[in-house]
Amino acid sequence: MKHILGFIGLSLFFLISCADQLDLKPENSLTFNNAFENEKDIVAGINRVEEIIRGNISIANYTPTVERGCYADEVSASRALVRELSSATIPQLPWNTHYQAINQANIVLPYVDQIPMAKERKDWYKGRIAFYKALVYFDMIRRWGDCVLIKEEIVIDPMAKSSWVEIADYALEQAKLAAKLLPPFDKAVDENGNTMKFKSTPCQGAANALLAHLAAWKAGGKYFAQPQDQNYNENELWELAEDACTEIIKSPLYRLANDPEEVCTSVLVGNSSESIYETEIRTYFSELGMLVEGGYFVLGGMYETYPVKPGSSLASVQYSDFKIKASSMKKMFPGDDLRRQAYFYKLDSLSHDSLDYKTGGYAYVYKWRPIVTYTEGWNIGKFKSFHVNRIWWRLSDIILLRAECRARLNKPEAIDDLNSVRERAHAPAYSASEYNGDLRYAIFKEREKELLLEGHRYFDIIRNGYANLELEGGFRTATQQDFIDGAFFFCTPLEAFTRNPLMRQNTYWFKFM
Image (tube, rainbow, N blue to C red; front, side, top):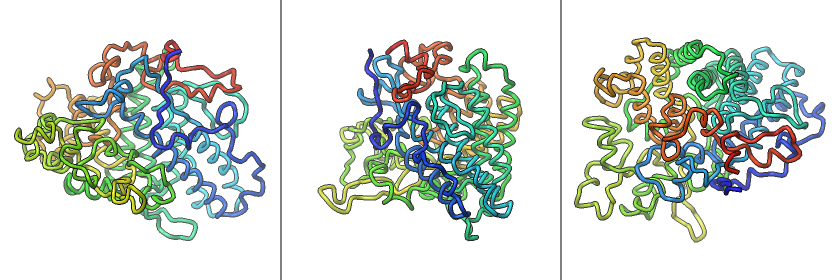
């Protein structure tokens, strides 16, 4: 049997538990007849779903997925195998907490209609539950591909996996329901009538962002669906994604930050007008404890050194597992592109040849800046984590996603969307001479620039079918059948096979076990 790598990044030991055969059993198997007697009980139940998503889905084990395709010019040997589709390292992550979130949502759902409340309050809670379920399944099909589909039932018996296409269809239904039931962000209020203030609040805009990304994933992923699952019209999905993006873009509630510097100092910190949905971390920092140590819930944890981390020096960048060449970034962000100065610390002056002995010729990533340091113990004064939220989607992402949808549908307005993001950065407007006239690839490359290290690139590559070109190692020579068999995804967690004769392993990875 080949070595199976279980990613032990942030607090993996928090995630692996002795659950039942599918890791699907509710945390509390008692009856719930008396558990939900009023609106506050409903709120507590839904908040528990949010808590699971915040700690164990948004933060823990975030990087092992996205690091397979995040931009890097050099990667340490210990991390390279993960990025190279190597049969020597079979990637595995537990999925039990995802199903805890689904089951917790299903426990609460039937009681919403049983408790006397105004219809708008019931819609608010049903919409939140639908959003969370769609979000969890969206995350699952991008990590594991095929997995077990649980709809409204509470499951304790063995179940077989469903295709990722079937799960995407269910998630799309839930996202549409959420977009219908949830109010705009400025109209969302809690059980006491207080206006919701955090962008971690599911709202109409967040639901449309989720709907857009779900539709785009299914549309772009048709090439790696099983042949029997490919009988759908991807253009209808691109239209759906485009419409969902437009609902967000035309809303007065969201606007682009003034410039890339504001993206770094405000948007990526949290709760800005450019943010559409994010996981609130700063408010719960103490509660999250070890989950946030190291700052690995954003990719800055693996890239940033000087000047963000106290005690680091110019030379510290040379010892990072992931490194970016200054020369590459000068080429990516030429001329007056404002992202050149905002996303990197003194890119031009620190890349002078006279400093190569210290810098190694690497760029200093500078996107995530607020930090928390240790206040006691032997680490006192040293970097502990970033004091920022995990941003899922921001407006420039949605504008560029709409550009991709329009390019897929051969709509010339795609160029307008592309240029609106470039204009903010003072980058040149699109020219048909770029990338041999391939507009969709130009949009992909713009997403790579604008959303650099924000966790989108691996999924953008998969959705666009660029794995042979943009990924590394075995991805360069992998066949379409390899992708259909599940090469993009983690293997099915070994814990899922306990007392479950219906469970089957990911086809691609099974041949290496």
